[in-house]
Every structure is written in C-alpha cells, then in structure tokens.
Image (cartoon, rainbow, N blue to C red; front, top):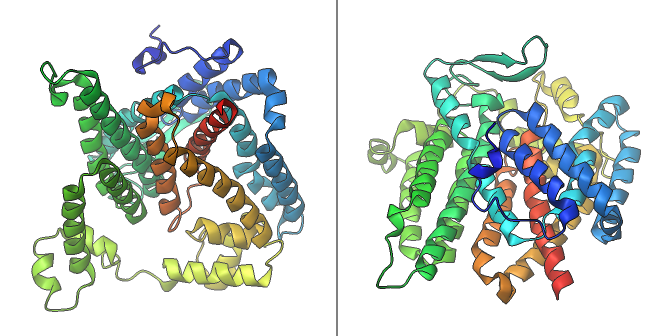
Length: 444
C-alpha cells in the first residue's frame, strides 16, 4: 500500500516531541484525504486531535486563550436556550464548539515552521483531483459515490455544476468550491515564492540551475493555472476578490510592483466595463468577456428578486441584531425569519459578522472576534520581528497570514463556516498561526 505521506515534501521531518508523532502522522494523512473524502479524512484528523489531548492535555489547559474559548462556548450554549428555536440553535453549535477543541489541540500539535510548509503542500495535493473532477463535471460528468453496501454517501457531484454552469465538483455548491480553491491558490502562490527564494539562496551564482527547470516550479505553476481557471469557472465574486487580494499582498511582499501595476490596470478595465457610464463602458465590454463584467454587476441575472440581493440580506440581519443585541435570535434562525418576511429561503445572510451578531448577539460576536484578533495581532508582531533561527521560514508564515486574510475577505460577502471542510481548514490555518506564536513566545 502506498504511504500518502511520501507525497509531501519534507515528510521525513520528525516531531520534536515523540509522543506527538502519531498524532502528527494521522493529521497529515487526514488532511490529504479530507477535501476529497471527508468521511474518511475526518477519522484521521480526529485521531490526531485525541492523541494530542491525551499527551498534552495539561499544556492545552494552561493556555489562557483556550480559557477564553471555553467561556465563549458556555455563553453560546446558554444563549442558544433563548433562541426562537432552541433545538435548532443547539444543533447549530456543531459549527463552532467542536472547532474550539480542534483549535486547542492543533495549536499545540503544530510547533514548527517546517510543519507549516508540509501542511501548505497538503493543501495543494488533493486539490488536483478535485479540480479535474470539476472540469469533468462541466463536460457532462457527475453522479453519486457511496460506500459499497452501505447507504453512506462519500460525495455527490451535480451534472453541469450547481448552480448549473458553475463548477462545484465534490463540494456540492459553487461558492463552497470557490472558497476552498482560493485557499489552495494562496498556498500554491506562497510555496512558489518560498521555493523561488530557496533556489536563489542555496545555489551559487556561477552554478545556479534555473528555477523554472525544477519539477517543483512546474508543479506549482500548473496548480496556479488550473486553480485560476477553476476559480473563474466557479463564478464566485468573493473568491475572485480573495485570490486577487492575496496575489497583490504577495507581489507587494516580494517587491514586484510592476505586477501590481498590471493587475491594477486589468482590474480597472474590468470594473469600468461593469460600472462605467456610457459611452465609456461599450468599447470596454467588447474587450472584456461578458462572463466577467456581467457577473460583477449582476447583469448576468437581471430578473433576480430583490430579496436575493446581498444588501437586502444584510439590512435584515442588522435589523435582527438591533432587535435582540444581547442574545441574538439563536443559531440557524436567519433562514426561518427571512422566509417569513420575504417568502424566500436563505440559510444565512452572506456575511459572517452579521450572521453571528443576529444569531448569537453582539457580546458573543465581539468575544469571538477579539480572541481571533489577539492571535492575528500577535502573529503580525511575530512576522515583523521574526526570529533569526526561523528567518528562512518567514515567507511560509506570511502565506498563512495571507490565507487567513483571504478567508476574511471571502466571508465579507459569504459564509464558509457552515461547510465542514471549509470550517475545518479555516480553523487549521488559525491554529497553525497560533502554534507558531506559542512556540516563539516559549523560545523567547
């Protein structure tokens, strides 16, 4: 049987604490499988979590950040009892409470930048079959896969995409796939920059082999091209914004300002084609594909009901927040309330901040964002004062910061926390950042 760990560059790296080696091996295998087959991958990820808690439970309990998440969990449970539908609200806690425990374990398991690099590679490897399946889907492929003899579905892939014409692959819906792919795109971009830097520093000027000849560069360029095409085919404006935002951060970080100028010029042309007044927009629309400008300004769906617009959803969610600012209306309450008001079902208001404030109230929302904000503030300080012994790993750490920034950008106009794989990956990125912060603090 092929060991999937051998596909990961640097897989021979040993965890500094032998008691956590099994947990680390299980986690790596789990995240290799998880995006493609969540049911199986989750088992390995759970084993990694349990083994970490078993061996390092005392250390986990000593981190005050975890106390904060524990107090928040208690508040969310209590607040759910005051929701309009307490049963649904308690079920909705499944999108949050288990991940507090996941974060506590994996921020302890991940203690080295070498682990960040391995996980970044793990992000890119399963994305290849997922994107190829998506291309097959748009060509008329699709169907349901289930375990032999067991009524348990592994995945369901809609023929022609979901919504029709938009690539969704094994994620079931186009926006979910797009949220995943923008993460993959940023990690591939970060690995490309990291590999380029290592190639430039580890070879002598006289005998330097061209970077473009290395298998690593070809693999990463292929990932970036396929991922870029797949992102376009998902037709997700939020994912487009996150990918472009991440790309700009990398070009600024590397000092490639000429690329920033090119991207800014292209973006100006596309936005002008979408929003510029006549007669400026007509010649631009003859150059820019309608698929782009019509999707940006919603001309692609001209007869869409007003209730489906982001602005209507956000206004309704903010009104709910103002009505019950302390406890909110309960998790999973937006859908029934919005349907009662507009006769259209929408499960969430396409904005993470407004979804949380309307569901769990302002105090709980501020608490969650404060805990996450502390991690990001500490990680930014660490990035600006990166330890000398980790200097060669600075770019890969920067990649994780950009990846989480991409998650934030995407969740301004959508919500990825309600999809198991996306939620898990977001918490993994945050736990990875926090683990390195913990390690740097203990080292100092």
